[in-house]
Length: 352
Image 1 (cartoon, helix red, strand yellow):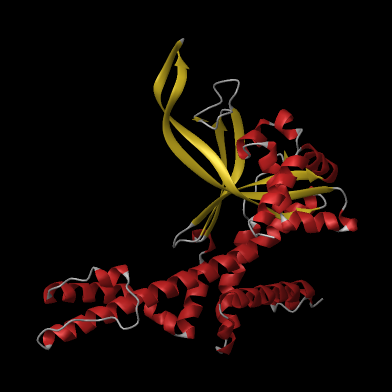
Image 2 (cartoon, rainbow, N blue to C red):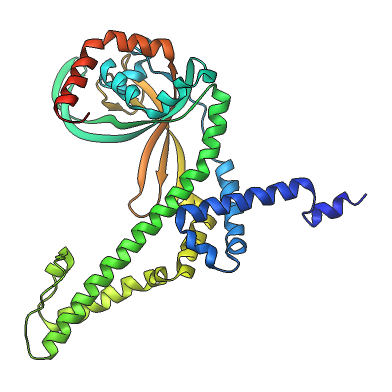
């Protein structure tokens, strides 16, 4: 009869479990940002509202159901998407052989012969003029946009698609922690660079006020900012004011409380630092982008477009893939000579 009271006071089993999950997530964030935050009294209570908001946001991310791409030799003949992601079957094999996550998965006897995983890629676009046929006439001066993918990475190999979906959801927190850590590092570096330049400006002003002389950086650090400092006092005063203004929002990072403020800011506004958008683009077999599937050789390529961070944001394309142990062996057998040649070259170059 007192169940409603326990729920209201958050003393029931479900509420206690939610609280434990939140506190565990907070500790993961602290480990990934600055462990010294634990020295601050009440740091958990300060992070709790933002952590609750971030976990709700991560749980609501709209991962679309994309048909996994089969990473195999046969896949190049049966799935045109594969030829848009890799330049050749050999490049696919080299990617699979370089994945320690996939190697660890197949080394475990309990995992089985099939791995479902997420593949992360860098997507780039190149503008060019190419040839096309228009109303029966071949034109060679048509502006085209060529899309290519590189920096492939395999993440979260799983025994089935359900486990993969669960692993992807859990990875969201790890990604957010990495975003927070990277933001702190970038902001700290900005603060140090600005502070260094400000000291150079103030030293030069002091030298000018004493009737001339020359400023020599005895540390041996010649930054681009210091090299381009104004030579006259009005210019230096203007630069000093600009630097002080830029430093003002970063000054708090010299204290633990300021670092905690940055962590809270990200947790309370997760959508501003971790975005996922479903995208579908249309490419022909040469990677030329089309606005719609207007020709037989145009393929629809769907993926998740993930943008991480605000300062120097990182953009990646993510899609599910499937790897079979036997099909991987077929690739290895098909390109055994090429693999042996590459290994020999690496040994000769001293990489092994």
